[in-house]
Each structure stands twice: as C-alpha cells, then as structure tokens.
Image (tube, rainbow, N blue to C red; front, side, top):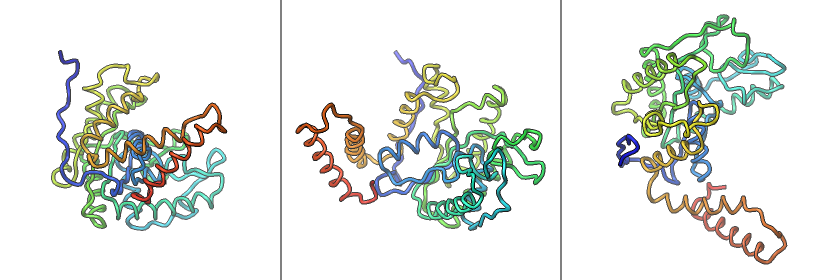
Length: 313
C-alpha cells in the first residue's frame, strides 16, 4: 500500500557536493535550514551573508553589488528604533553603531564576491514574489525593518519581472564563475500573511520564472513540491502551521543528500556526526577514568579528521 505520492528524483551525476566543494547559499528561511545541515556536517559553506532574503530582487541586488564591488557608505544606511539599518540586508546585520554597520556591510560584500567566485555550488531559494517598494527612493527593499507601512507600496512581481531578475543573477555569476552548479529551489514555507490565494499566486510566479531560465544553465530542486505532495499532513508543520517541522526538514535534507551529496562523503559525514554528538555529551562524572578516555578518543578522531580535511573546525 502506498501512503505517499513520491516525486521521482534522479541522483545527479556531475559535480556532486563533497568535502572539497565550496557551497554558498542565498535566499529565504529554507536555505538557512539546508545551510545548517551542511554546516553541521562541516562542509565548506557560506550562508546568507546579508541574512535571510525572501524575494529574487533582494538576492539579485546582493549578488550584483558583490560582483560589481559596491562600497557602502553612511548614505546607504538609516536610523530607526535605536538601530542603524540597510534596506539591502536583513535586520540581523542592524547595529546601534552606524560605523560598525557600514564596515560589516562592506566586509560581507567582499566575502560574498570571494564565495561566488570560488563556489562549486550556488544554492538560491526563493520565498515570495511579493515585494515592498520604498516610496522615497522608488527602490524595492529586501527588508522593511518595521518602518511604518505607509512608506512602502506592496507589489507582486510578475513572471517576466522574476525571469529578468533570475537571468541577471545567472549572467552576473557567470561573468566571474562559469563552472559553478547553480541550484534553484522554492521555499515550502507559506507566506500566509499575504493571504492564502496570494501566497499560491506568488509561488506560481516563482516556479514559472525558474523553469523559464533553468535550461542548460541551472537546476531545480523540488523542495516546495516535496513538502506539498510527499508530506501532505500537518504533522510535518510546526505549531504555527506555516514552517516545516524538524521532521520535515530532515526528510527534505535526506532527499537533497541522496540527490546532491557524493556517496564518498557519506563516511566522512558519519565521522563528523559521531564527533558532533560526542562534543554535546554531558558526563555524570567529569573526573572519571571512563570520561577521560572518552575525551581522549574524541580528540584522536578530531585530529584524524582534520589531517584529511584541514578546513574542518
């Protein structure tokens, strides 16, 4: 008896992710979830340098600015609610010090450029096609930072708008890195604050635009479809009934792993997992001989792994 409608997925044969790969992730909350898994297993990753970015225009702005070497100044930031912010970045970069924020923005821009240039894999997760346009500057912002709603106009990006944005992203990446595998995915997180119908329309625009541009240039991973079709049950959601539960995240991660992670990396992942669990172990008696032997054995495993992969910390 089949209790799921399984999405057929073929394992990729070219440029699989292993412990020599360099992966950078941009986009919505779902890229954070996959990024945390890659980070846990100590792959070489850079995850959302400007924080979570929900829509394609925000991701385009970051990537274009990084490759063109934009220099942020005090004129690019603003003060609100006792913090300095940038409309290009998530609030996690916001800072009480204007100077610190500008320094951080420029540091992240340089970091993003280096990561894009040296990446073997670039994962871009789109969350929504709904955007907010600043009425003062007529620019679409990445984050409103709780600035009063009357300062913005809410808009739905058309399929053509998104297609153009994604083409710009691909072209500017290829100008500095023509070898990286670019993986697009759509976040399964529902933006129901926009409305149920509006959320469906938004996701449809994103998916349609992605499939216009992926031919021969990039690849689509169906995280949205896995959540909607394979995991059609509210037990796979958190209590807010919007975000995927840890069980759902693990399910989609295991699917991603099957498709995109090299089998040669599995053994190393198991070794890393043993060490990670060992580091979290809380002994009953820290002075016991058994615990001292446990720590010594753990340190031996860490040294052995770092000899093979010096980037692992």
